[in-house]
Length: 440
Image (tube, rainbow, N blue to C red; front, side):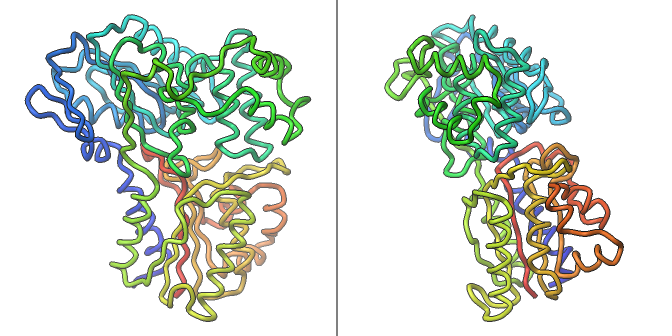
């Protein structure tokens, strides 16, 4: 073992490498002569007039680049949308960069370009759709009667109230003209193959990027339940509330459900997920000399509560060697939520590390890292943060009160001041968050 901070970063980086979207595509998609093979399903490329790539997400450009390499001259055209700063050089596929997590005009234009391309698709066309985390914000095509401003306010309100990704995307799907299976409707009668890099707990296909090419399990009635649960009727834009209520009354068509003929010529493959990254991180930690356990791949709920629980396990390891003996590495994945109560700057990973650092204050030998695999934590340039048992004390010595920063949801400025931000830059992938605790 080396320095715990160097080790914990190396473990995180191993998890990132396992989520590389290009490698994920190549594990699942191969070309044998003129036959495209996707998870054992074969497509005779000679039987198609056109082969197109569409899609959206933080990893969409990297996924499209891998498909361009595989398909070579068979590929005819394509359009994808990705987050600003996440594009890469492509030969055939056109790239739109747009806003995330709050959608913008560029995202609307990109969505319309995708639908315009698909409107001309025929029975002898093959559409490959690449989907990754971030796709919900990057495919912001408002339903009739709803403006982009309405969608922006709705997204921000849902993020701030502490709603989880299932709840957020349930509402997004029902006020969209492209999500919730509607991209699949646009692709008819072409053959549609969707390749998904999952950033959702349980790999729920109708939740990842709001499921643009798959059946939707949620309903307008579910949307109203979410609005009532978080008391949002006076917080969300009136046109959104009116649209959802009209949907319950049957005035707007429901999203297509399982068994709908729209999905007869579609298939979906999950090419990567948090589980693969956790396994790679575990292998790296073991190679560095740690006794390793994966606590969970599906941690969710309020960030501060999750941080307290993880810190409690780390303390138990230090006291009793349970559930794993020292030198110990505990890893978890998933995606928590932050209920915004202050006016600071941060994200769920930085908030997790700050809350956990307060819990382990004064305890030598415990090091924490939490980072988003997409390289971005909230509206910041950081992926997360790193801390240990001395972080809070050192900050106090410089007049920085950790509890005050946490109460103001200002974890970014806390770790900026202590020099503990985790900066990766855009990673071109997204498989939720990785949290790592070392006990030495």
